[in-house]
Each structure stands twice: as structure tokens, then as C-alpha cells.
Length: 558
Image 1 (cartoon, rainbow, N blue to C red):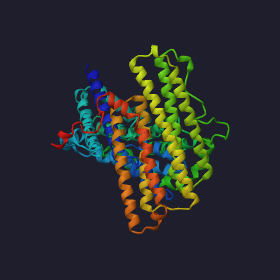
Image 2 (cartoon, rainbow, N blue to C red):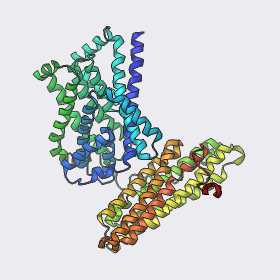
Image 3 (tube, rainbow, N blue to C red):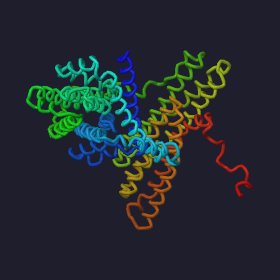
Image 4 (cartoon, one colour):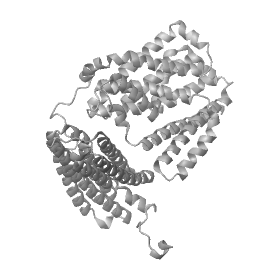
């Protein structure tokens, strides 16, 4: 019975730890907005600077795995080379080790302070950023609380036969402990959470230091395997970064586990007590791996390309080529028909996203062939809208409930918003990019950064909007509407700053003024069309007013 209670308590504490780590990560992502791409791609020609960006990114995101997936995505889009992506991931793992070091300090006294301050901000703060700061503070408090609960879960069986048997096995079989560390990290989907748990076990005397070191090195292998697993659906170019990281980190961890356990170092380290030894080993391993591997990441590009070659032109189907996700065979089943309709609207949104992502790159490059290619994709958006309206009209009304009929109407209306979004990209933004290239205009540095920031926010909001389309999540819907207001404010501020630069005589700003102002307006309008998916959900849940106007002028005057 004691074992069952122990497992239940340990599982609950571990789930709280995973939830808390995710809560901090989500809060930081929402508070910072979509600026992560800029952190990585700024000065990415220098490997050391790129690695430093990876360190910063892991500290911000609280996750080396999230940083690795982001680097893989940027590598696939051409914003990072494979070598640059590997430098980011190596730096990110060291940054994650720094996060673990901070979280292992004795911060128990901060738990009530963080809970009080974070709870107040999350529940009462008027601004979105302040609420996300509250989310971060609550997440840190929950991490510290979860670590304490893990320690307390061990108390009932500390003196029994179960734990000593497990500890003895892990201490005697370092290969088994290494594999266990990798497996636990993979299952938990978080190297930070897994390592914090191992450190806690050693700190309270449940595990010997030597077994803990093997688990920590295994966790490094597990985090690399996790990135491989999570990137399995990406393109070949994207998967080269996680594969290269696995080769470097797996080889390093394998060598380290053999060297440490077959040298006097293991007996020397085993003489210490407390989890700080594990954290120090983890830090040392990652900083050594970073500086030993960094000079050689360029040499891995060709072998990785050979292992994961690019798809041959014409051999792979265009990902948007399947003409439609609409299935006319299920027309008589409204639930299935609505699911089919939802998939088609989502596919339509993915085309719009593919058109929107490279816009700022085309403002810089002025690649007319690529611009024409993306403008041609708008035909697919228009065709999808026609198919959706035709399909929606053919679903038998007499077989649908009121809720199902409302959902069909919402999906059709949102497809119209997406068609308008496609027109904004094709006829405004891409046209402006071409005009800028033909006239050889330049933005001021400040103006260009403002435009890139707005574009990044639109792309981030697209991902949120498509999640809302599928999940109808109220919190994400609220976030979209709040981001729409933020976009309006940012567009207004950027316009004022631009006019100020004109008054101050900035030549670049004057020459590109029309394009700058039109781009601002187009990005704001594009975001408004994307955010429209949130309104039916918020209205239905009673979180949206029918009108913003004051109903009674006399009451307003009072």
C-alpha cells in the first residue's frame, strides 16, 4: 500500500512540475510576442553569437527542446543554415542548464510571495503583458512547490526496501541508469523537469550521486531524441538540425558516461553530497560540448544533407496541391460534413500563411519570380472559398441542429475573411514589395524594425487563430482579440514615429513614406481578418458585447 501511495504522490508532483514548466514557457512566449526569430537570426553569420542567441532563447523559453524545434523551422525556411541551427541548439542546451542551476537554489521562501504576486497579476491586471508576467510567476512558484512535493512523496518509503534496491541497481549498472535517464526524459517531454527531479532525488538522499550523474547524462541523450521525435513531420532540411544535435550530443553523452564511470572521477564525485554536484556536471558537460563542437558544426552540413537529402523537384507533391479536403460522400452526416468543412477552411488558412510568411524577406530581396509565385497562390485561396460556399450550401438543412447550422455559417464567414486576407497579401503587401524593389527604395532602420515586428505578430496570431478554429479555446480567442487591439495601437504608434522621422528630415523615411504607411495599414487589416475567428466563440460564451457604443446619451453625460 505504501508503494501505491508513493507512486500516486510522485505522479501528482511530477505532473505539477511538467505543468509548471509549460506554464512558464507559455507565459514568456505570450509576454514577449513573436520576437524569438529575431533573437536567433540577428548576426547569424557568427557561430559564437548564434550560440549565445541559443543560450538566451533557452533561458527565455525555459526549454532546450522548444529552442531546437524553432531553430529547425528557421533552418527549413532558409533563415538559418544547418550549421547555424546546430550552434543555436548547442547554446540552447547550455542555457537550459543555467535555468536548472537557478531553479535548484533554495528558494522555498519565495513560494508564497510568487503565488501572491503572480495570482494578483494573472487575475486582476488589466493588460495582457502583465497577466502573462503573473502566469510566469505562478509557474515558477509551482515548480518550486512541485520539487518540494517530490521530496515529501519519498518520505513514507525512505526506510523501506524498495528505494534502496532501485538505488543500488542504478549505482551498479551505469549503462542501465543512462538508458533510464534518457527514457524518463523522453516520456516526460521535458529535460528541465526530468533533471530537476533527478537533482531532487539526490538532494534528499534517495539516490547516490554516482547514479544521479548517469541519469543526468542519459537525460542529455533523451532531450536530443525528443527533438528528433517532435520534428519527424518536418521537411528534410528542418530535420537535419535535430539529427546533427543527436549525433553530437549522443556521442558526447556516450563518451562521458564511459569516461566518468571508468576513471577516478566517479569515486571522487561520489564522495560529495547534494544535488549541486549533478547540476555542476550537467553544466560542465554542456559547456564542454558547446565549445568542442562549435568549430566542427560546419563540417556536418554535407553529411547531414546526404543522410536527409532534399526532395527532388517534381517528385513530391505540392503540399497545397490536394485540391480539396471536402468530402461529398459524408454530406448526409452533418457532423462529418462539418469536420470536412473545418479541414478545408484550415487548409485555406495554411495557404494564406504560406503566402504571408516570406513577405518581409521579399521586401528585402525583391525577388520578382518568388513574388509572382506567391501571388499566383491567391488563386488557390479564391478557389477554396468557392468550394466551401458550394459545399456549405449542399449540406441538408433539415438534418442539422441549430448549433451545427451556426457552425457551418461561422466557417463560411471565416473563409470569406481568409479570402480577403489572401487579397491583402497578394494585391497589397506583395505588390508593395515589388514596387519597393523596382524603385530601389530603402526604409529607415527604425521603420524597418517596426514593420518586421508587426509582421512577426501577424504570423504568430495566425498560429493562434488556426488553433482557435479547431479547439474553440476561449482563452486563445480572448488573446486574439487583445492582440488585435495591440496591433492597432502599434500601427498608430509606428505611424506617429514615421511622421516624426519625416519632420526631422530622414531621407530614407521620406522616399519610402508611402510604402511604409501602406504596409502598416495592410498588416493591421491582415491581422483583423485573421482574428475574426475569435468573435463567434467569445460572443457565444457571453464575453463580447453587441456594441461598444453607449446606449443612453443622457447616462453618458452624467
